[in-house]
Length: 251
Length: 251
DNA sequence: TGTCGTGATCTGTGATCACAGTTAGGTTGG
DNA sequence: CCAACCTAACTGTGATCACAGATCACGACA
Image (cartoon, rainbow over all chains, first blue to last red; front, side):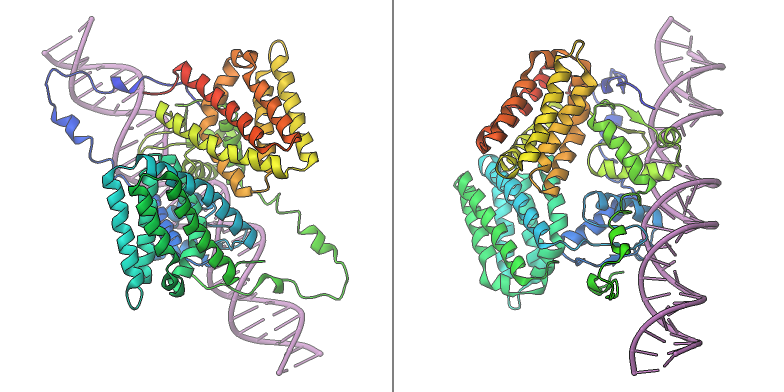
């Protein structure tokens, strides 16, 4: 059933006398196009969830999703399994898989975790992000501001820019597992947060997110870790308070 | 493909005139025995990983695992899918699924995340754990100490007691998503940490874990959040340094 | 003796079918 | 007109089969 660590990888290709062999140049590509169908479906559903295109309580049928995406039921099953493991989807025995409906307590817990982990990420990013990464983040900040200021507000664009802004920040920390952890939290929060942002222009008009994003970028440029953390935490906190106030949560 | 939020759940059972029906008392149980085969396999593999019974680099075959557990390949596929989503297993196209071999950098990142999140959990637990929960944790601490002091040391018992101790602490915080997040980190770290603890008695002899565990329990009883966090972080830090010193990590 | 080629075997992936349980809609009886 | 039942459709789960790619070992050639 199991075997100990096999031969080390450096013995894979025999040492050739040629200074440059074309084989070695080829095997760097090709790793990306080996994307399995299940992973593609997984990415598709993941995007829908984070973007708030799937609302809490929405029901999905494996067969319907499979038909809509032009694949069989198997890849969908694999994708849904992974999302259920992440808590992004739920499946009760005998019932259809559905997007979980968070209770107020669960949403509050989710927000506490986001404040802790994403706050830490902002702190670290302010310390070690490269100038290029900071400017990239600033670009998304500008895009978000523009989407919010447009009339009528570009809600879909704001959702995308907001996501890009945050994850560019987290990626700048250089901790892939941290990014994965945060993405898991977004998968759970996305359906509520972004469905709301997509539905209501008021939150964008008030501009609290715009303000905090600007403060964040300024803190990054000033290498002020504390200010960066506080700006990001304020962004999360204010959005969460807005959601909690709508009373759209269960219980 | 999707439908809006359906009828609220309070309409599920028609309002009966009877003050107490035995049916309502029964449907609280039964959720546990409705365990699918895939979940059982998932739990089985998860236990093996956290306990360090599967070493980094170990290869698993879907068919072999299925045969060993007496089920078909399908439940194993589902379980492996979930564990791959958690990063606890890896599957390269065309190759067998295997336990990931962490690089030193990845292990350091994992440790940083554990210090942040589990440290936070210890802090909160010191604040809100009930006396009963603290005594439960103290019981596991005693079991760990006894396993470490035995001659020869009860390595398997120490691994179990250590796991029970930590997760009793985290459960006391009352944040299920926090526990899930931590469990995901343990799934990745377990194969290295506990394989080592299982193999080498020296770490138990030196007793650094015993000391930190005792400090942790004392801090919990004193409601000293800072001391609890520091004791837990020292426990994690010292174990991680020990692992890093062995040089068993890749690259 | 060393090295390359080649075929059998094993790998995960995907599709299709069968089944038990639930859901929803239509119909019947009051 | 309303409620209860009953049937037909739909749900996820599990099993079985087919397939392309990778691995490994044996054998032939230099």
